[in-house]
Length: 220
Image (cartoon, rainbow, N blue to C red; front, side):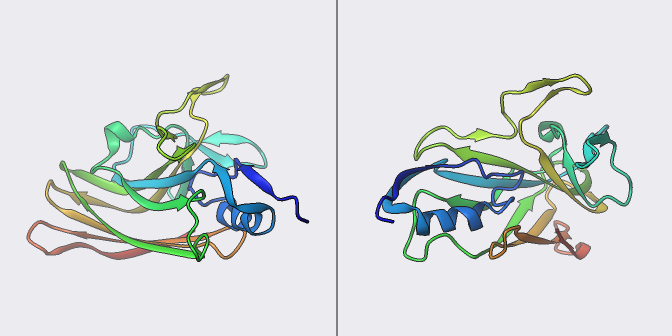
């Protein structure tokens, strides 16, 4: 087919930038359906993460098939949370765990895997409950990003105003931390399947270098 697209508009973005097969699907579309110079909208999307404390109250999507909204239980490790109060609960600034540049394609195309190591400096005393993420979407190159922290909301009759995207909370053993401690996160994402596989290894060290929490891993 010689009639290839010069513009690709997609909304295949989940609570994590690459979720729902975004990389898999868009890489295929760029290869088969578009010209080499095609404009891709959104241009890029980032997953931002930070260590957080447990908020006073959380509401999660308990079971998508039943549509039930509930509070998480002790056994829930990966939680899709409505409007996580990141401003009040974060222990450090957010950092990018992944960035997908759909509109700036190199010779190798979109990646099949991504790994990064992030070190967070704890900004206040507290208890680290886990990692929370939000996504930041850039519609076109250079435009102001839209995020799942600052999104237009819609009215839900059950629980009020909600963000258009979920926040993902990955729980680790709750650990007391103090200002100046460091939380190291080794994040890995494999994009080769329709649904990516994510993993994170978290280590907490004190200001004096002693280990507070040995490496703790989680896959989802």
